[in-house]
Length: 117
Image 1 (cartoon, helix red, strand yellow):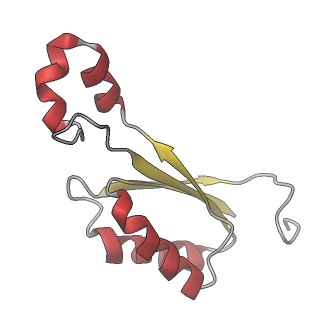
Image 2 (image 1 turned 90 degrees about the horizontal axis):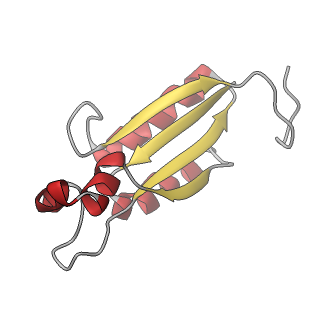
Image 3 (image 1 turned 60 degrees about the vertical axis):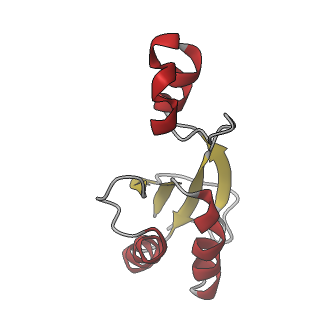
């Protein structure tokens, strides 16, 4: 089992990603609003304020947040499918301004629908 963590740069793409997850029986995801370090630095240190347009602030100064998806995936085939579905929506994750995906091993968990083997 692995924990898939996906930081999606464009939050408007979240609904389509979650639709694809649902259609492919990938469930149990938790989504949180998130913000990158560059956003925080630009907001709090005046020397970086002129770079705010590069850090995801709208022209009116409102912050643009990322969304981060957390989901435990039980097998490698489903994990690869989830990553492919994310890239189907956001594009090649190796390109800028798309997102970031990484996985971590899940050694123990409680509260999942089936016990770990």
